[in-house]
Length: 105
Image (cartoon, rainbow, N blue to C red):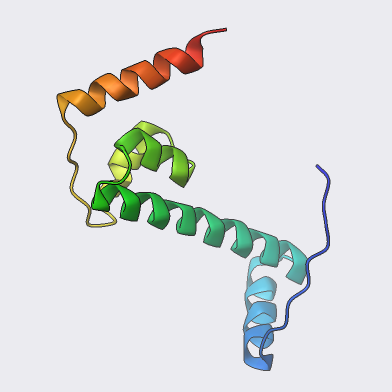
């Protein structure tokens, strides 16, 4: 995988906490930062998918795609986000059509 250097400024307190966490996990600072960044991005994607789904601007399958999750994982995590599942027959038809389109060679 190709990588690119990313630099950012943090407070002294954040740096000390980062070093403390890195020491506690046995990771170096850079490895821990990559892990934190990936975790944060995944959480942000999930929140964005849930919020758009909650507002009714996207379907459940599109919310799952936005979140980078399978449809089933998205459904399982909706409760965590205190979001209600509102899934009707029309949305099922849309999801089945999208699934069928993705499977065609």
